[in-house]
Length: 77
Ligand SMILES: [Zn+2]
Image 1 (cartoon, rainbow, N blue to C red):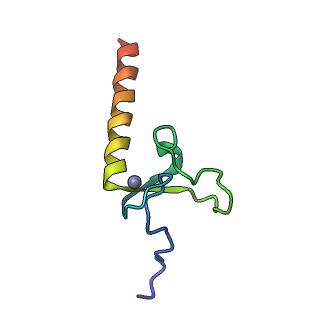
Image 2 (cartoon, rainbow, N blue to C red):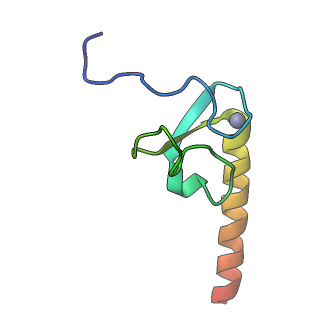
Image 3 (cartoon, helix red, strand yellow):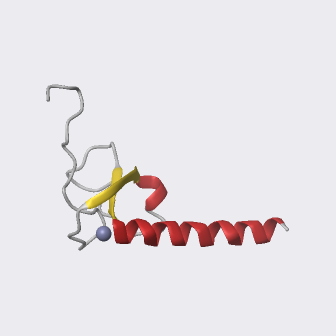
């Protein structure tokens, strides 16, 4: 295991207060509007803001993001 890839990420979901193991890693800026994540512009964190989400919060994110898109589409109509 001496590849360039390092599992330096957190072992927990990035949503504030959540302790579940993450199953997905998304760009923080994409997730930030929908979930309360403690990474973007956060203290002590590097600028590579990836949001790690657990199963539950990933589902929540997807749900909210999709809803948003539906609203957008309604406007386009
Ligand atoms: Zn979570």
